[in-house]
Image (tube, rainbow, N blue to C red; front, side, top):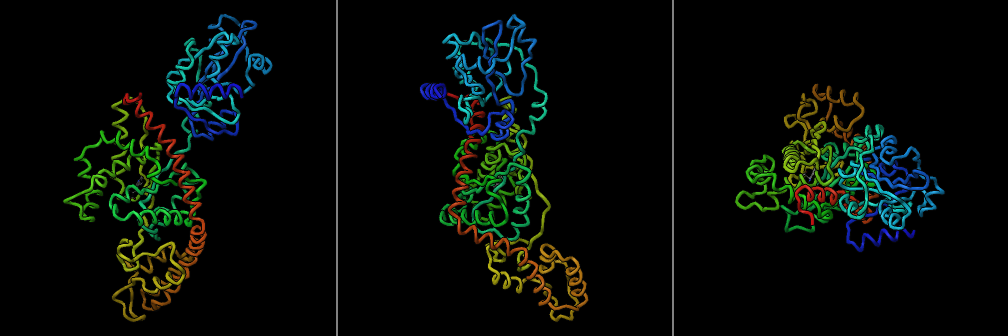
Amino acid sequence: MKHFEFIKDLLEKRNIKHSFHKVSSLSIDEIVKSLGIKYSEGLSTLIFRYGGDKYVGILRRDDKNIDSKKLKKYLGTSRVSFASDEELKSIGFEPGLASPLVLDLLQGENKINKILIDESFFEMNKVICGSTSSELALEIKRTDLEKLIPIFERVDIMVPNERRQNVLNDTRKKRILTGDRPTGKLHIGHLFGSLMNRVKFQEEYETFILIANIHALSDNRDNPEKVKQSIGELLCDYYASGLDFDKSTVYIQSEVPETHEIFMYLSNFVSVQQLMHNPTLKTEIKQNNMEDSTPLGFFIYPTHQAADILCVNADLVPVGKDQAPMVEDCREIARKFNNTYKKEVFGQPKAHFGVPKNVPGIDGNAKMGKSLNNGIYLSDSEEELKKKIMSVYTDPNRIHATDKGTVEGNVAFTYHDLFNSNKEEVADLKARYEAGKVGDVEVKEKLFAAMNEVLTPIREKRREAEGKKAELVEKAVEGSKKVSKIARGIADEMKEAMKIEF
Ligand code: TRP
């Protein structure tokens, strides 16, 4: 405890940026897993006894092992061994609770004779190391840590730890980032287009779901109330569709201001002309009648979206096909940044389009949307659903039940294909429809039954969510803090690369 206070004081007095992370175990494997870091970001403080009664403190990057031959050679003695618990206590360490930041203190007190730092340490950026508290790991920048250990010997005594290096790429679960603009409730098009996929992904990936309220404001600037309300609606829709807020990190764009900082740094790697030619942006500017006066905030949103993605260094970005140019831009920007500063800050996020499902509106329009007033919402009551299904667009040329009908482009059958798990029933209805042997009413009643079966549990979960909206908002705020921390790390790496560190 005495040492922990010393460390806290030291960092505060010297005004050194750092953070403490809660850990529930001192095992390196556990810490790496729970903090989502790489072994190469972990640093252990090891104490050896040598040459009889001398002690040496060694800093070891956790993807490395000490080569004992090299160590012995360096120390000029064959008598080198790990300090025992008794020995550790005799020099003031609780066994298992060392920290690089007390080495200097112990050296000053003549309790240890040498501090050795391996070459590999000097390639580190962020360092996660011991804090002498069993519950907290310390995160600090390598360059800062280096300054706090003034007297050490720089050595080359490590070999790779094969096991850890082999899992290097696996230690961090692959990350997914995707999101929605909060402009309204979600409908069954979203359910098949993205929500179902996200629920599947959250088991396998570290999932981040972004509520892009800053983007929503860029074309709804005079309607902040709508954007705010829609955040609540989105949270309920997420919950209803099976997103687990403990597995997926749901967060709010405006609560991660590092996004804006990262956007600014990235903006040097995309040209105005490139944005002007972005096909999705072009279409949206036209749809919004913004051709003569495009708000800058709207114009730059594709690059801001690249910042969203790179904030967590996402590996996979599940989006609709319309977002392909955004992800493509993002990859290019990330590449250019890395190449310019000769530093692998970013990976190459990949777009994931899934299997596109065609979910037309109830009026037959190919797209479902609020402005078209043709949607079936996850929040719709059973009565609303029934009403909408009974009015669904079928075959306009079929007047009587005995007329031969067309299944192709018939929304009732498109929905049957999506929702009705009784494939025989669907095949039978289609055959009779084409032969003029079934009325629209039967087709629609069976459709309602099938859809209601799928949508009832969702509707019920949504009602439950509405009762605890405040809790869900709280979760999203918590999620934002987590993302903010990750993004801070990325922004700092960018700053270091760009030499804007002071
Ligand atoms: N532009 C996306 C949309 O309209 C929403 C979004 C914002 C997003 N930032 C993102 C999607 C980052 C994926 C990744 O749907």
